[in-house]
Length: 379
Image (cartoon, rainbow, N blue to C red):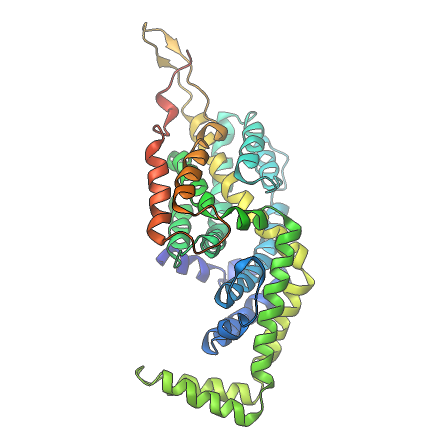
């Protein structure tokens, strides 16, 4: 998608790179080389040769490996962002407390904690909170889209694009509905895979598995005898014959493998992620917390900014019912009902079609009353 591509390019910009720690800058530079090698050599095929944890195949393990790389880079940026909140203002404290929320327990646990944090939010704080929340949301949009897409059954990357676009474009007035949609997509993920995302230890183990298997697959390619490398290059060229000028990149790749070009960069990526696995898993959970938390912050900001009393049935002024994320998350039972009927809440990732995923989200949202509580009044 255009938004996802633009966001990925932003990480390469000088301003963004300056906000990363030295190890994260090196990881960012090396990761592009690893992505190219994994794609060109079809590493996903060899990485998935053995049975893997969580029902994940080779393609999914490669995706999981790169989610770990992206999460490591984002963890460095979050360190910079947190340190940039130098003041002790009420607005900064609200954002800091929201970022500190744990993802254990999933979206509903986040909703309860974020609602409690936002209870002290004042109308005069909303501009600062909105600006900070939008910045956070933008930085984690692609990671959240890719993460959910990995676990949504038969997603074909569609869900990831939708989620990234939604997180990128959404504004305060749409945040309540955006929260409902994000939770709806999250609840399409099977119970088994949500258990991985909501348990840091299990998530760390899954990242370790992906890193180890992809590392072995890439290393095996470099360790092949020269004769085997040349033979593989010939096979690749046969497959790519219909593609014009495909022999040029294939020759460059083969030459690189024969001279071990790029091997050090790949090994550095695997070593960096391996050394920081608990931090990487925590960053993935933190990104999920931020995705839900920032939408809740934005919805509360919209509510606080529109706190003017309304006319009741008798013509008297009545205060509005305060918006809460807990109330907005009534979507959860509806989505679970739809996915259960479609087979999506079972353990296997392949039990629900792409049409079933989209239908579950759309259908669940249609079952619910209008999310805009602004017209409600306190009885």
